[in-house]
Each structure stands twice: as structure tokens, then as C-alpha cells.
Length: 393
Image 1 (tube, rainbow, N blue to C red):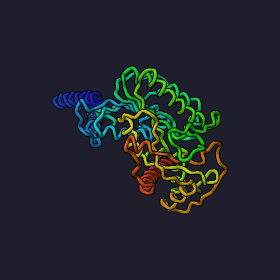
Image 2 (image 1 turned 60 degrees about the horizontal axis):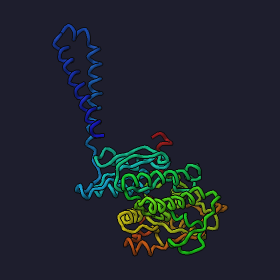
Image 3 (image 1 turned 90 degrees about the horizontal axis):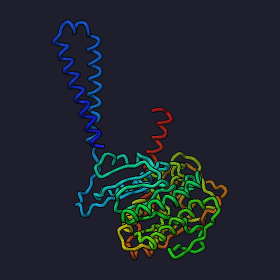
Image 4 (image 1 turned 90 degrees about the vertical axis):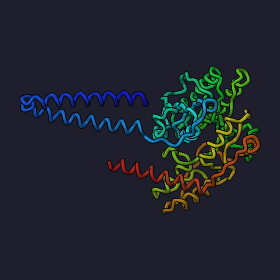
């Protein structure tokens, strides 16, 4: 990126020099000057445009980046993050970049956004590849964080076949890459592997209660297949695998229309719309802030523990309680209304994190009130941008 900008900058400067030389020759020739006043005026306009482009390119090549640690060669890792332009992926990229590693992001931008990582574009340690992991990928890396997959019900139900392919064929491709280059791979699994659990709280030893043909099965079973593939490759091909079972996560950069309960409630409350609860509202979830999850992912990747580990906040809230907390946090006059529940919606969800505490020394630190404050602030800005677009401001 820097080489390209430098080349373009050099070309534009050369064009300006030539243009000025042409102008000097024209000035020396009074007859030509008198005859070509209009041509010279046009030339001046072109020179001004070229100067503006040079200034713009200088701004690009000198754009400020977030602070990055200066790691030595032996400590700096080449890290691939699939789905790195998404909600969780972009926060993970921020952490890895700030630590001084070389990071390659792969994303097909189905749910991810360049805006989430634009502050790194052009940095010498950063590379962005637009690619769908259902197709093979050839890069040289030391670690792979495999986060690529739609994660909210509306997104993964939009194209269930694609969701299954991403979590099966895509995972095979990434495990194959890890085997070829000798990289360690962390696969982002989900609490959905437990389905609508009959055991509470859910520990990693619980096998789950999943409907294999229900509307959520493309994601639930896709992630279960991804886990099975990990341990098949670990056993047969000696690939170093790590599996994180991620529970509900929230924070800035969530897709504004992703259909998850936190983003739905915040968006509805900010616009004074009805806060919609599907079902009785007695079903429970546990919500962790995104920075806590990133801490857990990095600790797990660099640990010696290879069995699945739950990463989630064990503080349990009913959906009804969450609606009230968000309404209080946002303010406004939104009424809370209930609608018919959705099929296979888990009734209770709470992680047992003893394993994470024991083997990673990890537990969530950010309280819900603090995390919601930051998330609400982000959504306020996003809604203002959307409103400005509608008004063509």
C-alpha cells in the first residue's frame, strides 16, 4: 500500500514539474502566451487539481495509526484472523496489532465491514484479503483465529446452506492450512452447541440438546461439525487446535440490524419504539463484553490447553430483566411488548467457567452496566449516521 501510494505520489509530482516547465516555456514566448490565454488558464486548473491530489496522497501515506508495540523478530507472530472485519474479529485484530504482531485479515464482508478495520489499512503490519474461506487459502502464518461465520439468527438463517458450508468446508480449509504451515488454530465455536440445554449451568462436558433439522440447525450443527473436525485433525494430522465456546457477547461494532437481543433492545429504545420480547421473557442469557472475550481468546490461543473451553459471563439475566436494564440505561418512553416465541429458542443459558478460570486464569471483568453504556453510545452514533444518510446531509 505504501509503495503504491509512493509511486502515485512520485508520478503526480513529476507531472506537475513537467507542467510547470511547459508553463515557463509558454511565458517566455510572448506570442504563444497571447494566443493561448485560454489554454494556460486550463493548464493552471489542471495543476491545481494535481496539487490537491498530491496533498491528499500525502495525507494517506502519513495517516496516524493507533499505538503499536515494537516486537522483536522472535516474539512477533504472523497471525491470520478469518472474519476479522466483523464485530468480534475486529476487536481481536486491534488487540493483536497493538501487541506488535503481523496480522492478516480474511473476510468476505457478508456481515463484516471495512469500517471496523479501516484504522489499520496501510500499516506495515496489516494486510486485508477479500476472500471466502469456502475456497482454499494459501498464506504463511504462525497462528490462525478462525472466526468466520455469520453468528446472529437472521444472518445465519438467511442462507443456511452457506452457513453450513462456512462451518464445515471453510473449517476444513483452515485446518488444512494449519497442517501445511504448522500453525496453531483456534476455532470460534458457540454456546449454541448446547442447544436448548437440559443441564444448567452448561459445562464443557455436557453434550447438548440440539434439534438437527430445526431452523437454527445450520449454525448449531455447523459449529458441532467444526468442533468434530478440529479433534479429527488433532488426532490424525497432529494439528494444534484450540476451541472456544463463546456465549452471548455485546459491545461496539455490533451490526446495527443483526437481530440479537442486545442490539435489538438498544436500537428500539433509542428510537422510542416498542421493545419487543419474543416468548415469555423468562428465558435467560448471560452477556459478556467484547473486551473480556478477546482476553479469553488470546489466553486460550497461547495456552497449552486443547479441549473446548467456555468463554462467557456467568451472570444470568432473563430477557425481561435485560429489557428493563436497557430501557433504564437509554431512557425514553419505549413500552415493552411480548410476541410469539421462536422455534428452538433456548430457555436457559449460563456458562460454567471453572475450566477457563483453572487453565487460563480468565474470568470476565466488565459489568453489564459499564459495557451497556459504551454500547449504547456506539449505537447512538450509528443511528445518527443512518438518519443523516436518509436526509442526504
